[in-house]
Amino acid sequence: MKLPAPPTAQSFRSPLHHPRVATVLGRWLGVAVLVCFLTGLFSHFQQESPAWLHIPTRPASLYRVTQGLHVLSGTVAVPLLLAKLWTVYPKLFEKPTLKTLLERLSILVLVSALALELFIGYLNTLQWYPWPFPFKQTHYALGWIIVGALLVHIAVKIPVIQWRKEPLPPATTDLTRRGLFRTVAGAATLVGITSVGQSAPPLGPLAVLAPRKPDVGPQGLPVNRTARDAGIDPLTASWRFTVVGPQQLSYTLDQLRQLPQNHSKLPIACVEGWSQGAHWEGIRIRDLLHLCGAPASSRVRVVSMEKGGFYATSELPPQFAADPLTLLALRLNGSELALDHGFPARIIAPNRPGVLQTKWVHRLEVLA
Image 1 (cartoon, rainbow, N blue to C red):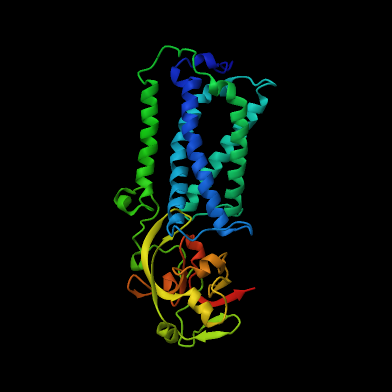
Image 2: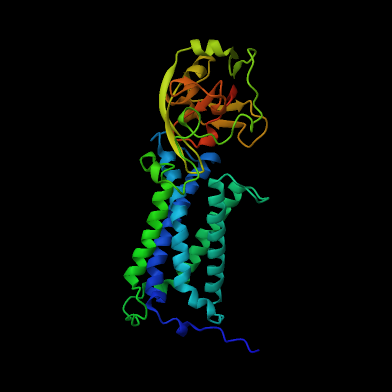
């Protein structure tokens, strides 16, 4: 039986497959990818800060906004990518030439990397990692691959992107170009509204696609990593908190409670995109540094009792240690910390990812 010949571009005469339509959708997708890349870069540098980069402590909710935008733009990019691919798929049936080979390769790399990036990014919001490679490093590398492939693709397609005047072919379907644009924009908006509520509490009731409700959990906050997951047992009366610096300090929990207490209203903002504001009470890190004879602008290592894990320790850069909002928190929303929220003590600081707001802290080390 003879197989039918593959369709040609002339088989798709609908103006919905016209280069002008692809250009408009490509711009929308490009904006979403750019926002996602820049906000992802900010998140990566928060966790892997190069020595030359100064991460600000204010605005205090900056990371909450940028990471919410990161997840939102990645989510919205899914329907935009599908619409863009549907518009240009007739080109897939064209036989490549030497002249179009670079374009085809750039498209292959761009689409493959972008699809994989969106897929593993979505699974990260679910905290599900069914692959053997490290998520953070892979997600970061794919971001640069996407940007590089996108730049090559734009360079190759500039003659088409700049072209405007050739008339469109007559419509052959009931769906017009404007109808297609409204449909795609509506789908992207719907997906965004039903997911962004995990970082925008006023839209929380509409967040049916969000994996987290920001106000559901002990003391009104979600929990990513429980005490059981971290190997933390209920503490005994022998627990002590230590500051290692010019002078070594050691406190029981009762002694920490007797130190001057301060309040901070700060959000927990996690890399998965959810965030929630909360009221914290505890001792300023700068005050603890003063008590041990260290400058307020010291770099500080925070050590958790967590057994293993990527974030059993973290570092507070000098600007965060010196900020008056940065606390060794003992209380959350008016009551003692729940064990899953880091009892007896945790770090809370402005403009920091949740993974760096270390829980179950038992030691601070002043670094040279």
